[in-house]
Length: 247
Ligand SMILES: C[S@@+](CC[C@H](N)C(=O)[O-])C[C@H]1O[C@@H](n2cnc3c(N)ncnc32)[C@H](O)[C@@H]1O
Image 1 (cartoon, rainbow, N blue to C red):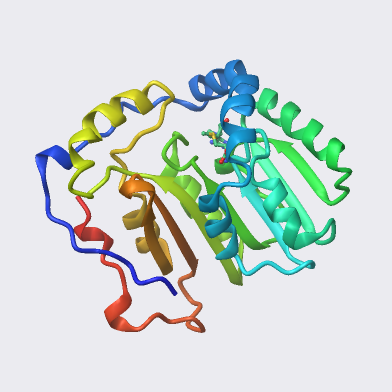
Image 2: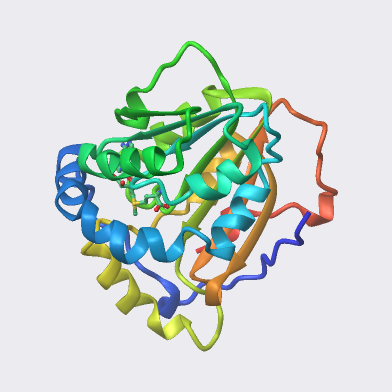
């Protein structure tokens, strides 16, 4: 397990206040309008990203795994997930943006994946009959309007032995980058991305965090977790992150 780097101090430079909450409708319309642009610029450019690989590696996938990609967008995680599943198991991708799912659908057809199911719904309303072995969420918990309810539902949807992994964005605590936090927060705010959320703290209150690692100059983090009642992979006490300390 990666050793979490947890030493933080509060700093006004590091602080980005929470955005006023957009609702699902505003977010859906934004991502519907820009699905093709996101696909061309961000999707294809990042589908082999080492950060996506790192998060997906934390899921411990086998060819039989059932995987939920929460807020899958244009399907930028699918290639890496399928490198584990090999068109076996199940991959369910859900998103509130139907236009993003149209792009994802074309990707699935292009690769002839027959184990992928796409669903146009919000994670907060998603109540399937089966639970998942693995749940992934990349670059979305900073955007989802009701993110606390989304996190609660994610852990309801995970099997007791299952793994959750996320790739998220945050304000950087790295000394040369801290001065950029306010600017980066303002720019990303235009895409409804809220860097003011302490996602790790909310996840910690709901689940057992297994690993936490910052990357990309401290602006990204990869976190993995299991359900609260899973004691199999207990990290040693000294390695446990304390997310309540993160400003
Ligand atoms: C920045 S994109 C990330 C897409 C993809 N996960 C990736 O890593 O490229 C954020 C996505 O979250 C989706 N989203 C926002 N709120 C959602 C919700 N409540 N339920 C499901 N998807 C949601 C948006 O439609 C958008 O596709």
